[in-house]
Length: 287
Image (cartoon, rainbow, N blue to C red):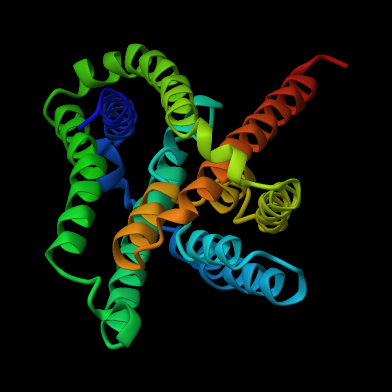
């Protein structure tokens, strides 16, 4: 494992530890599921039906490179990466709804990946690619994501006061870790940016903006802020998509497009978060 990969893994683990610390044991006694299933179903339909249909429409109607088309379809099938709860709560949103969305989407995405692997196992071109390597890569992903999150949640459950005091310093470290992830990721794959044309860049940016527009159309309710819908829709699960495309499909050439997509998405998400902060500040201003 290279130094860059270790830094990436460490940054993601820190973000997931912060996400675990956000889990409040009192939610379980108040009814964590109450009033959330219907808005979650709307968001799931948006992410697992509307976004894939949008991506499919782009590949059919526009002159897209086949590798880019595969990238868009893979990303469209896997929404809401592990960083979404951390990003949204850093902007001041209450953590219970984004955590619920992330956990629910994680379960659905796992089922989607298993279904895709089962379908491809019966397809001659891909059957030989599926084996112990596939299982080990997916296991590594889930351990890296859910291991630190479970540790944080258990610590908050066993020592609520100490866990609550840790949220602020861990949040600050997580912000630094996210910048580190972006820098290391971009540096490690800087040569691959040259393989992406201006037309490909426009297509990827159009996909990101389309996902933002779809997320903005959905307002789950007065107590379910639209920010989670926008961020979880436009920010697809790139890590899981790369693992699936490179291990199962044996298509490492999609990595360049997914790297560019990650950079564009982080830029757009940053703009959305900044706009939300500006809007909230204006509403809070007197007069």
